[in-house]
Length: 190
Image (tube, rainbow, N blue to C red; front, side, top):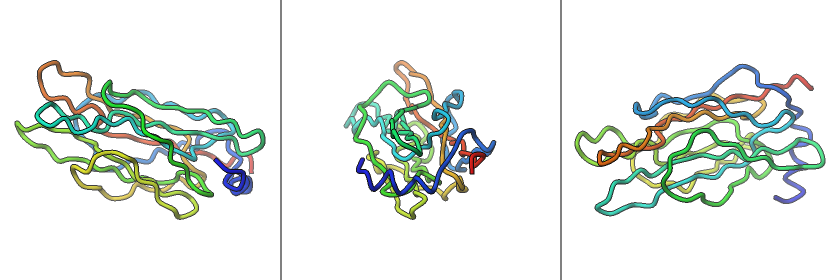
């Protein structure tokens, strides 16, 4: 990340705790269990993301989106990066980090495949974020399903992540990541 990107958030953030607000979307998959919320360290916020995605399997069982990482940075020098993720599925590989150019992650939309009956189901396939600088980041997930409505916004950025993951189903159909929620940062240090 370049120095200009860090300087741009110097005046936007001084975070320490969550404001108690969790943002979510209504189109998440129904299978799996929620994990606990994982938080950025105090004084940091999510400025970047990376995804764990299983590529299309052809005749095999597809799971697509398996994990989401948040890349948290300090608002002040030194700008050390800390990566957090909630529970993740076991398939796929981690893709490249995408960074908000001048702001921080503030709202999201989830791409989910609707229930397929007896056919191969993937549940969540990709995610988009809006940054506080009005830019949009789209993950490198697959194109199955449709994006739902945008979540509400975190005024001071996103500071935590919680995922809903279906554990491996053996010979039955696996979906892996079904849904996600994010915790908002606070402005207590303003």
